[in-house]
Length: 271
Image (tube, rainbow, N blue to C red):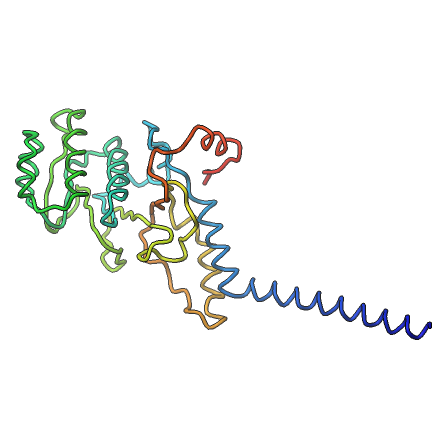
């Protein structure tokens, strides 16, 4: 009887050791593989970005950019072609206008002369030959309304084609680091879960958020060290400018009072 009890005890301890060993192997596999690194990266994004309250007239959420306003020569914003990205661009442009004398908006294509004629007259029939899609046309109309609030010396106008500094350029497409120019502040929109989004940024954002990659340096370094260990493609950098928007699934400005209260109690949004 005693021998049976001894054998049962040995088997029980062996089973416990096997379970512990399997758990340790699983933990190590997660920590030293893409699984853990990507999860850690997404957590870093969540913690280091701030929800943007588009009803905040002070746009205080953008303080990450404030230190760069005085030294920049211009701005380039890389966006998708959807309406939400143009809404984000308008929101960011309004912040820029509070701190900088940027008065030129540059599109890559379109008829700048017609657009500026519309801004001066408000005649929407002029937009028929402007060569812009619906989302860009809506953006132009929003600029017309915004211009009404600005003094003459600060009103916005349009230019097209390639340009230099002293402007706010809207570019549809992905960011190319080789195009980076000294003195130009580059910003992009990122879309969690979409085909054109870097999967690393798929963090299930529920609202527009803003952040900078410098706040993710530890996460990206960790990811660079361990990615590819399980046969997955190795991480070779993020194809994004330093500053970025993360576009959530909810329309901007749709935050409820309860959501705002939850953020205040949880402390979400601190960088």
